[in-house]
Length: 456
Image 1 (spheres, one colour):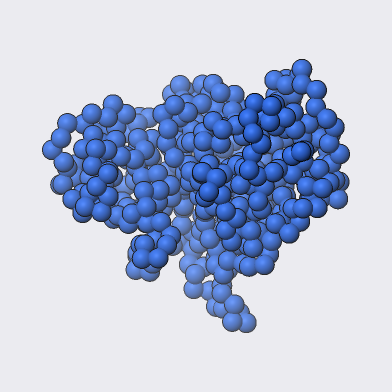
Image 2: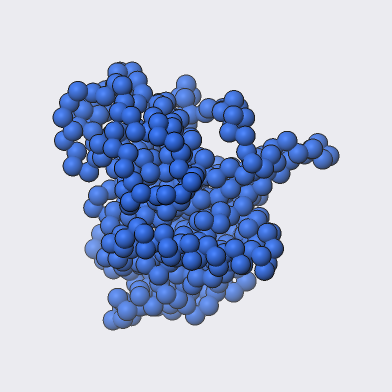
């Protein structure tokens, strides 16, 4: 989902300059268009990463378009849908969220890389109905028509034969969570497979596995120890995997799953509500209690430094015990506040933080800071009772510490805008201006001017 609000967001997009185009999402952001149905979104490797970071825990990118965050889990009409944004890169997998805006050339490429912290959180879930990811799980192609895949994408051959196609962490999640459906993208080809858990694929290519990170395809032991919950699917249950191609003429990028979704039989059948005044019935979107519990239990390990915290070194049993403890707190909160506190629409409301494309010029002239504290993230953190570390003073303080010897010109924020125009925002803008000034001294100016900077 290339959610670009205006041309300033293009500087946080990891693509060659010739591909940096505004697109049409900005019309949805500005309210000129509206998605006709609830649309769930995950991030890939060509995103406006500054916008995605604002909504790290998830939130509305535009009316009716909900981003599931770097990792997330919600309930849609009673169906549990979990998701993991980004792609796998071994170099950054065990890092914290160290990237800072304005993103350097390296940071704009690493900011969308999947982190072990988020995968560990997802591994604490209990068998969601549907899982969404950008990357493919490593080895999933072995459960489908490999010869046909290689005919269509012959340059995948080396990765397929070395068992290095796809993400090893997602392979572990596929094995442990055993969702009923798994949808992916990234490789720009439509591909379907049926994964029978605990059973090696019939079409397993007869080559030695040379990928040290890949798991044995018939290894069905839990990564973190046996989970004795009664919700474990039986041995031999299946996951229907489907990857879609890139949007474009003659590409297979759209798939309707009417029969599959009817077969799911959602516990809450909100999809068949009586329509009023000819409008589509509103499908329920709710926070998942277990995910809120996991977020509370793991927050103290959330790292904003290059070196990650010790979350991955904790025993799985201890993490599960902490999650169960926090689940009791979440249940108490719901009992005290009422079930509406889990209604996403009542907790988070779409709010424009960055200017629309039409407002961008005025914004630039007023030299406003271009780092935002999103009210939706504030609302989520308030709900689960954790401090908000996303684009707040916590980040500002760390940036100031790293840049304490920098003398930056003062930028006057426009307090009439939707941003949190505080002293913190001004300090961030000062650091940002100084960083860009250093860049200009080292190399020619960037193609895209950023609001709040002097491009002379």
